[in-house]
Amino acid sequence: MMDMHKFIDRLAYLHSRWQDESEYEDIADYLANIQQLVPTATKMTTEPFGVIYTQGKLKLHARIKSVEGDQVTIEIEQIGGGK
Image (tube, rainbow, N blue to C red):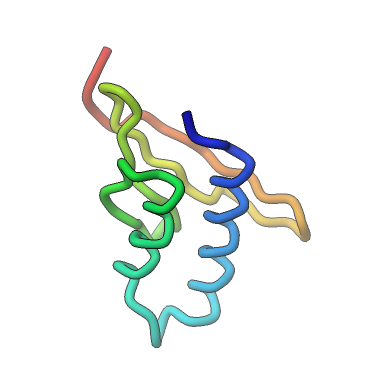
């Protein structure tokens, strides 16, 4: 099972970095980074910023919903597969 605090921290870090470096960096590198925590991650999204991954039979999209100072809110939505 993934450590949600580490996952949120990593996703927030990558989001902040993407805000600054999107013109120069490849989003595929961000996928490789997040896969260190979530090996089942298959795709990064930029609008909205997030990651698609599987958990069991579920396909999920975790995305940044808001960032206010140190507070980061993510939203996780099932996008297919499983029941």
